[in-house]
Image 1 (cartoon, rainbow, N blue to C red):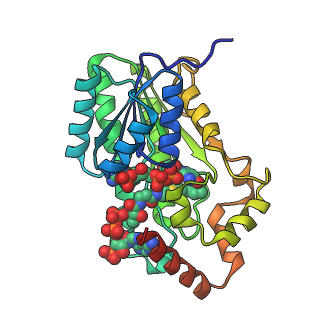
Image 2: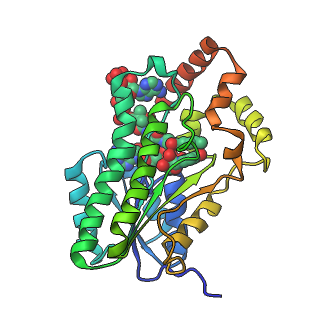
Image 3: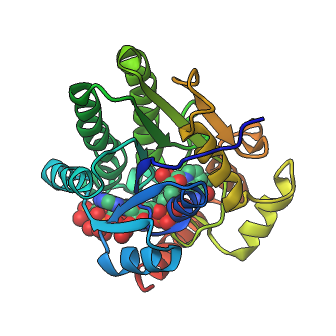
Length: 281
Ligand code: HXC
Ligand code: NAP
């Protein structure tokens, strides 16, 4: 049985300085890859790169901006001499009653999730096709891309768009040797997600008890799956959307459950509290 081996691979991870992006970066490095991480906050990226080791380089890039993405990926190719895979992990999300959403609030999430993923994929795909090199795009979506989900409308809409992008590009770019897959994680505790989406420790405990496995995901479990997908062990695996959720999705979209826990006014107050708490961090 061959082992996962990412030696000599150069992988870009958007949002690689925090949470699940950082966990995947750590996994890729442990299998021998060099990783370029990006995000908007330089200090966060530098701290993560320093903690993980010299195989990781930090780059400030706002994936909402095409020019920023062009500069970033051009610099990665110039610094490392090649680019083998892009992991579109960066995202934005928050809980809100949809009738209260402002157009700017909706756009803030769509710009990061859907436009950001398009910008990264467009640049990398054109590079691989022009260079006649194989490549891999791995998109991080959610388990509610097929069902929709209450209270996270911008994220549900944008992630469904990313899923459509995954399937469309997998077919269109297969003849060029470019694989395009997605991972759909269930709930994995991270500072970024929990501070915006977990309305209190009571809900966290209550929801955990409902989970078929009785627990949340562990970061290394996602890291191992992502590393396998990017490795040479999976050459025929493309156009797939793979859930890693302990079967959580089978009970319905996560935040639909919130509607059963409290009346709408109480939920709105909880969302407002969560919003001000996550802002003050
Ligand atoms: C309602 C909100 C809001 C909230 C912002 N807005 N937060 N509306 N409820 N909680 C509105 C603002 O009022 C404003 O509209 C508009 O959105 C833009 O706000 P900014 O603060 O300027 O946005 P920006 O700085 O671009 O930040 C984007 C962000 C922020 C998405 C709002 O949270 C962010 O940077 N997130 C990145 C990290 C993240 O979200 N991680 C969690 C991923 S977890 P107006 O009209 O007022 O100007 C995930 C897990 C899914 O996706 C599945 C879990 C199981
Ligand atoms: P996180 O730590 O908040 O990660 C989001 C990352 O995206 C941050 O590093 C953030 O860095 C970066 N980012 C946001 N806007 C950006 C922009 N415009 N340009 C570049 N980078 C940007 O949350 P997470 O939980 O690890 O989420 C990671 C991924 O997993 C997301 O795609 C999320 O939807 C998905 N996911 C998470 C869970 C979960 O339970 N945690 C479940 C399902 C799916 P800056 O703020 O510095 O830019």
